[in-house]
Structure formats: C-alpha cells, structure tokens
Length: 387
Image (tube, rainbow, N blue to C red):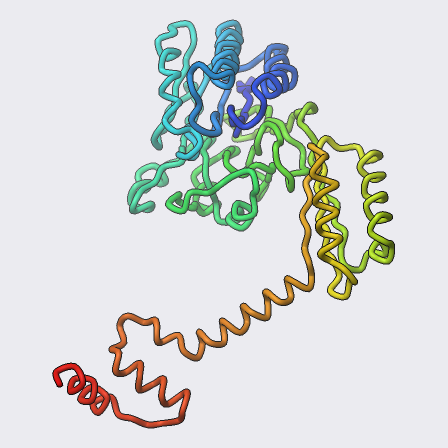
C-alpha cells in the first residue's frame, strides 16, 4: 500500500500583535490540542511570520512564543514529527528566528529553520522545495537552478501574481516593495502535489493546488473569512493529496457596517441617528465593529453630525468609526482634477532634463500665445546675467 504522509501547515501567527495569553489560548485550544490528538503527524510547517515585530526577550510576547515552541517540540518528540519554520517578511520575523537555534541541538526532534531557498527529501520519497521571502536583485537568475527541477510539495512565503492586488489592500500586513512576485504557473509546473504559502492573511485557493494558509488569528477589519490552519495528507507515489482547512473558532470577529449616503437614516435628526447606531451595536454579534458612514452631499449640518459621532463613539473601545463627508470628498476630487489639468498643461516645468530657456519659451506660448525662439531667450538671459 502506498504511504501517505500527514502534516499540518500554519502561517502568519504574528507573536506580538495580539495580547500574549489571548493568542496563546487560541493556539492551545485550536492548534496544539488538535495536533496532539492526531494519530499520525509526520510534519509541521510554519510558512513565515512567526513574529509580528521585534520583541524583547523578557516580554510576555516572547515568553508565550517560547512556550508555544516548547509545546510543539514536546508533541513532535512524542509523534516523531519533523518541524520546518520558514522565514517570512523581513519587517516581521526580523532575524528573530535565530533565537530558536537552540532547538537544532535537540537530537530527539528533526527541526530546521529555513532562511534561504533550499530543497530536501523530507522523507525518502518526498522532495520538498522551500521558498522563504528573500530580497534579491535578479529573481530569475537566483531561482533558476531550483525552478528547473521537480518537487512533491512546495512551502513558501510571499506573493504570486494573482494576489498582488489583495496584498495592497491588506490592513493587517505590509508588503515589502523589494519582495519578488512569482508566477503561479511556474511553481505549479515544478510541483506534483500542493503548494502552501504564507503572507496573504485571508485563505486563498488558486488553481486547485496553490493554497494561501492565511493568518492563524484575526486582529483587523476586512478579514471576515475563517482563520486557522491546514491539515494535509500526501501520497508521493501517486501525487495525490487532501487538504482540509481547520478553523480557529476562538479568533475574534471583526465586522464592518456601511451606512451610505442613500440611507434613510440621514432623514432623522442627529440624536436619532446616534440612538439607532448604539442600538445596532448592542444587538450585533461581533467582538469589534466598524461603522463606515458616508454623509450625503446635501446633508444640512455635516460638521455637527461628524463631531457628535466622533464624540459619542470614542467611548466605545470595540467600535471604530470612519466618516466620509461626501461634500468634502467631492471638493477634494475637484481640487485633484484641477491640479492634474495644470500638471498636464505645465508639467514640463518640473522636468529637470529641459533647459530653463526652453521651459520659458513653452510657457509663454501656452500662457500668452507668444512665440519667442529659445535662442533669443538664451541670448537675453545671458546678457542680463553678464551685463
């Protein structure tokens, strides 16, 4: 019978962003207890961003991170599980994975930190490619030796072309401008089985075999999708796999309510608007709520409404208020349009490659319809300077 390997893939834990024990309790109940109860567990992969930022070793964030790793090691030792941690975004992991070097020396557990692109036979008949987030000058040249071979599975952190727009809209994650962007097809063509990446915080499935794991927990608006990790099984001889998303049921809920300019709510007085919003807060089932309020252009007193909303809702620690004053937005848009027209007309003035006398000549032609040759302007300016 063909051997099936079973593992879990977790990503973007971001120690340091949530309250330490809140995050640890989520990890314990939704992840650690889950993998501890698995009959078979051949590998654990963390696909980047174990940390959120630099944290002090004596901080509670560091203590729970070490506690988490200690528990993973205990489970791995008991189940003969291999552990691989892939370096994520530079601004998050911040070379802090090196602190975990101590686990390399644990002879009872096969543990590795992956800082640069590399491959290995994780098992005798299962070849893996690791693609941590690295910042290089020539992507094609750097990866060519690895991308010309074939693998059973790929684990990495970073971007593929399909999610560039998603990355730009993430409120909970920054994308480094120097990070490479891969073509999904290039990765799928060299991989027989599934591919799992970190960095995008909302789970994504691309072309049935490419998976963004998503962040384990939630700490930001705009990510209503489930949070958690993947349980995966893979049969190397057949290239067949099964991937099951395991939900983190303890992740805090963040929801957004939009009140646009056509809402009947704006027909009420200010006190009634606020009362209705407070009633909604008290009945809505969410840990954190964001109101996006777009005040109509013809609203009688938008400033009063804005000030009162800000004053009232500043007292709600779990409510975020975003006010869009349609009239102000329209004014801003008009100003931007005027600026763009001016730049389109006179943008040459800011071009450092155009000589000053040519700029003056062109300006006089556009502004006053006067044709003064560049050579005459040059002679005039020179005479004024030396005279």
